[in-house]
Image (tube, rainbow, N blue to C red; front, side, top):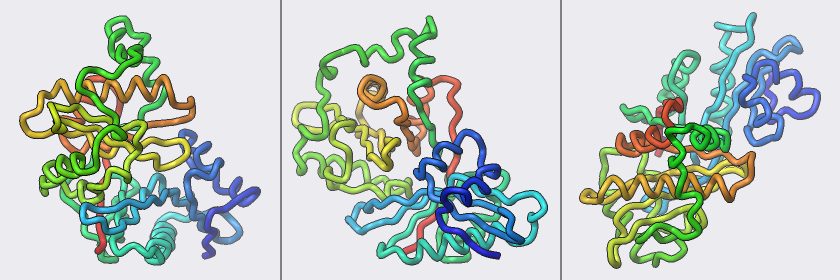
Length: 298
C-alpha cells in the first residue's frame, strides 16, 4: 500500500468521494491536511487532520492534532488500511520538535480503534469527553430570525462593550497571569494543560474579560488556528463570579464574530466545563455538539 501526503490536483479528486460533503470544501482548499492510502491504483482510505501549535501552562510547546475524518473505502475494510493511515500520522507527529504531543479523536463509530492505536504509541487519554460546538454565520442568523430569540445577539448592536468588559489588549500581562493561575489550578480538567499564562498566546481582538475593580472575574479566550477558524479555548470564571458574566462574554463574542468576521469564518467552541456547555446551548439552542477524547504523549 502506498501513502500519499497532502494529495493535490487529480490525485485529490480520487479521494474526494471518500470525504463527506460538509468538509469537502475544507479539504479542497487545503485547510484540512490529508493522508491518502492507495492500493491497486485505487483510493482505499483517507485521513483528514489539522495540526496546530500551543503551549501548556509551564510554557512547554505542545503540538496538537485534530482528527476530523477517517474512512476506509468499501472493498478495503478490515485489511489494515485505517491502521496504516494512523501509523503514517503518528510518524508525522513524531517528527515534531515539541516535547508534548496531543491528539484529539472524535468519539463514535469508525473511531473505536483510533484511541487504542494511539494508546499503544504512548498517548495517555483522559476519561472525560470534550464537547465541541462549531458555529457559523448562518447559526447566528437563525437565532436572529427566530421571534422568541430576537435579543439573543442583541449585544452585537452595541457599539461599546458592556460595563466592566475589557479586551485582552487592555489587560496587563501580570493581571492576566494571576487570573490564569487561579483558573488553571483546576487540575480536574486535563484540557487546561495546553493553555498558557502568557496573554500573547491568545487573539487580542476576540478575547475579552469582565473586571471587578482591578481584578479579572471571568474570561473568554480565542486563538486563530486557521485562516477560516476561530477557536474558543476557554470560557471560565473565578468561583464566586456571577454566571451572567460568562453569558455576557459569550453574547458579546458571538455578536463581535457576526459583525466583524468574514462569512467563511467559523468558530470552534471547546466547552470542557458543564457551565460553558450550558451557556453555549442557551445562545444556540438545538445546535449539536461533537465529542472528542484527548490524549497526551510526554
